[in-house]
Image 1 (cartoon, rainbow, N blue to C red):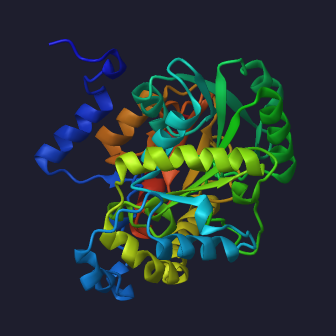
Image 2: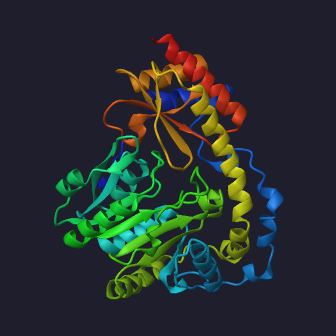
Length: 391
C-alpha cells in the first residue's frame, strides 16, 4: 500500500518518548512540567455547574447552520465587546478546534504549494497542519532583547509571490509576548504590499500576567484581511468540549468575499456539535471564575520560579507578558536532549527542550505553569540542583 506523501513523517518514537513510555508501563511517577491540559491539573470545574448546561431538550434537535448557532456567535461577540471591540455575529464562524480553523483558512487562502509564514520560536503543531494542507511552511524569526519582537527585516526576506498568509500567535506560545501596536501597523503594511492575509491565534489572549495591562487583539483590525482565532480549550480551560471560532475582519469588500467563501467551506464540514453550542453562552458567563482559578495557579508558579531561579550562573528566566509557559535560557553550551534525559532518568522531572519549539540558537528549557504548585515547586528545585551539578 502506498500512502500519501503528505503523511511521510518520522513515526519512530524518539529517545525521550521511549523513556516516558517505559515509565508509564512501569507505573513510575514523574513531575510533569510540560502539562498543558488543564483538565489534568486539579481545577474545580464542577463547582461552576458546567455540566448542567448540557442537560437541555434543545440538544435533541439538529439545526445545521453554516456559521454556527446565532446565540453562540452572539455570546462570542459579547466577549469581544467586553474588550471594546465591536464584532457582528455575522463575522464569526464556529469550528471544532483551532486546528480545524487553520484548515478552513488555509483552504480559503492558499493553493497547493503556496506558503504560510509562522513565527519562530512557536508551537510545532504548525508543521503538521501545513503538511496536511499541501502547503509549504515558512518561518520568520522573533528576536529577544529584554522582550520578544518580530524581526521585520528577516520577515521581508521570507515573503514571496507564493506567500498567502502571515500567522501571529498573540501572545505567542511559548514566549508569552503580545504583539505591540507598532508591530501590528508594520504587519499591516507588509501584508498589504504582499497581498496576503493576517491570521492571529489568540487562544491565550485572556491570560496576561498583569491583569490591569491592556493588549491588542487583531479582532478589531480593519486595515488588512484578518482572521482571529479563539476557543474553549484555553479561554475556559475546556479542550474536551471542542469549540473554537474564527473572527473575520478587514476592508469591507475583502471581508464580504472571505465570509462568502468560508460559508461554503464551513457548510461542507458542519462539525461543531449542538450541545456545546447551546451551552456556550452560559459557559462564557463563567469565564471570570474559571480564568481566575487558572490565573492564580499560573501566577503562583511563575512567582515561585522568579523567586527561586536566581543563580545567574545557571541561566535566566526570560520575560513574558502572559500565557501558560515560562522559558529558562541556560548558560553555556548545554546539550538539551542530554539534559532532558538526565532530568527524566535521574530526577524524574519532565520539561520541554527548546528545540521542541524551534529555538535555533542557545539552550532552553520550557516549563508549563499549569501543574499543581507542589509539583511545580519540587520540579524547579530538582532542575536547579541538576544544573548546579553541571557547573
